[in-house]
Figure (cartoon, rainbow, N blue to C red):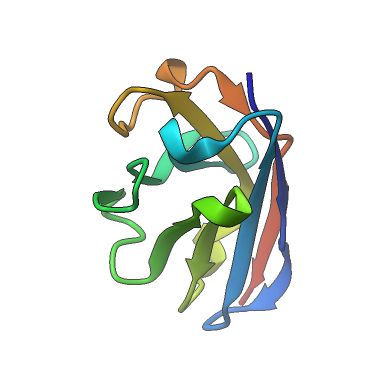
Length: 124
């Protein structure tokens, strides 16, 4: 099992940017697909972005494509999510998730390891 800790959330105005980090411990993540999900108040947790073990493949939800970028640094055991051109509807708790030896996907039930989340609030 890998432990995940997200950071980098905060309050930002619409149009602004944030960079989220997900630091892993307990195991090297170079065999893990990694993903970001988010959950807004009163809504289900939804897929945001995913990245393959070596960064060679990425996937994005349509709602964030062209604005968010997922990346990883296996040497630092860390995954990142760059959030640009933020909108009020991006307000949510953002969670990092990991799954081993399986290609990245969009289904949250297929990720056994999760962080505690970091709050992103976008004001209009």
